[in-house]
Image 1 (cartoon, rainbow, N blue to C red):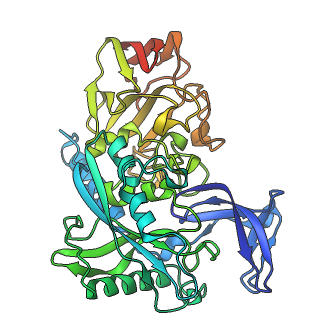
Image 2 (image 1 turned 120 degrees about the vertical axis):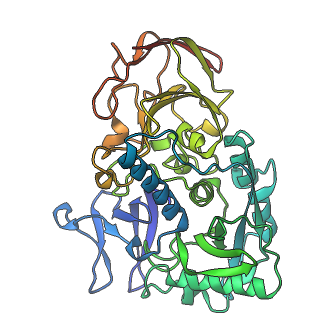
Image 3 (image 1 turned 90 degrees about the vertical axis):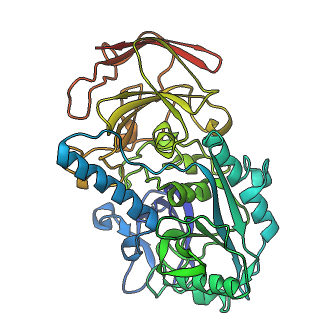
Length: 471
């Protein structure tokens, strides 16, 4: 699964036809599995059986995605970071960070696929409604994919999807879930097979939005049935790219993709998370080694896609800012007000073009119903840091790209002890809230003072009013 999963139940098939029910923690990069009693589970490379082992012999979490080709969105994101590094190295400063805004009309592609022996149980029409119909509520979802992105972007992104006719694969289901082949091989075979068939039949791909290399931004694949593979094998859900661009129409080729099973329900969480990558070049905001919770449930690009799968939380203020979806007002001294009713307006306090604090109001309603409390979300951003592999970031930036500063000062997201709780957002207080005299200080990443302090926070309905001091 390409988004993170926590204590999710899986049923693994054993070579003798038996099964083993386990709980898993991880994503497509790496994962670990345990019995209900908490005993680690590993696969014996000789017998192929999954078995419980003592913690001392379990080893490090398994990795599965090393052989998957890097998707274009990750290449684009790293290219932007490299431009930032080079400019800082050249003149020591940045006038404004280069960024690609995701504003206007974008069109992606969705491929529904069945197999000769596994028919589709969710119709192509239902998938089209899930992707495109305003007000969609099938399977308990809070709107369609179009609704989600239109809502969280403040109406600045209009993301529609061409849903292809249902395609029935040439081979049986067993052919594509073959676990003896390298991970992703059969998925790419299936995708190329379906796209080629649609292209040869004359399907109109002209509306699809492409990047600077003429690759279609977003290709989503729904295959019929359940996930029958174990993690990191066959058609286990993942995101990657095709081995080579596949021409679909003049100036338009398929490249990046995400693939998942429909099962018996469609849900927004995974789909919106993966399209955040493909459409917007959003990075993952969690640690790939599963030891930390990143920004937890407070952003779609972390555990917000998983906490409530039919109603994923909003994209956090930092990524909204990068996508061009919000109004970032420089924070000034004095009494200030933010409103959760205006979720795309926030304050920013800069050290320079790449390091800053960004402040927004969050409330447990609508898209944010899965949060644990109302209050100010204060984000500490360093665009040269990394939430996924902070240890490999450039010297002086070996910390998070985006961190949520937690009001209780316990730093539980970074420590990995929870994915968000009722003490994380900054709530009503007559005294210091953040910075000078408060439980949570406001230094820059290198420890120098930022001079920012917030105190006397009041709440009236959706509005949060507070005093700002700048030194």
